[in-house]
Amino acid sequence: EILMTQSPATLSVSPGEGATLSCRASQSVRSNLAWYQQKPGQAPRLLIYGASTRATGIPARFSGSGSGTEFTLTISSLQSEDFAVYYCQQYNNWLSITFGQGTRLEIK
Amino acid sequence: EVQLVESGGGLVQPGRSLRLSCTASGFSFGDYAMSWVRQAPGKGLEWVGFIRSKTYGGTAEYAASVKGRFTISRDDSKSIAYLQMNSLETEDTAVYYCTRDFSSSGSGITFLDYWGQGTLVTVSS
Image 1 (cartoon, rainbow over the protein chains, first blue to last red):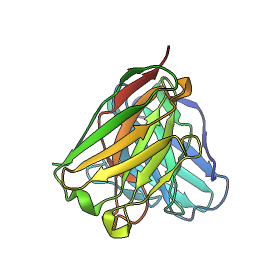
Image 2: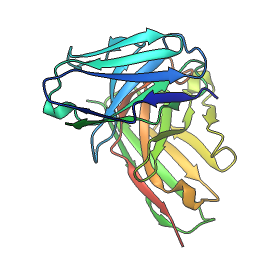
Image 3: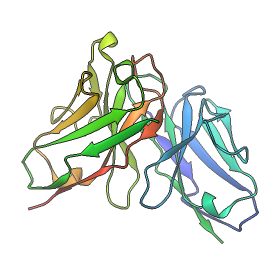
């Protein structure tokens, strides 16, 4: 099973600033990496797939990068609605998927 | 508009069974693989399993933690996916989400573009 490790566990950032979240895979997943956002009491929402492609309706301040084992989600100029938990997910073999443990992005 | 609505959650004793349903609308249900993902209280996301489209045999794959206890099935005529959960354990307590795979090929699992609102399953005596 491919393990996904996210860091940091919690990130404190002021509104208007940028944030960088990291995700590492235990083995190469090529570009088969997605990011989700989850707010309290809500289902997760797809943000990024293919490591860097924004899903429909996702603002341009969200960007993804990386390939292989190292991935980054960058949020520029944080808005109040961006404070949430973010998960990465790999889908390298089309038979199973695994999620990272999540990064909580909180207001500083 | 794509909608996924889960139902069937509730309180169940350890060792008993429960069946969840996911009613889909707004897309060609039979073309897509469908997955279940769960989230224990205050915890992260855990993939449970998925079922392929009938084009690819309608077969299912499961996470190791539920294999042999949980079964995913589908009724394309009703646009419903099911999660049959047997031999439930307290560790199965979670919100269970029904999700749609992004790819309309229906052959495997990739990433999940639509999620239901979730249904809570509590396993306790």
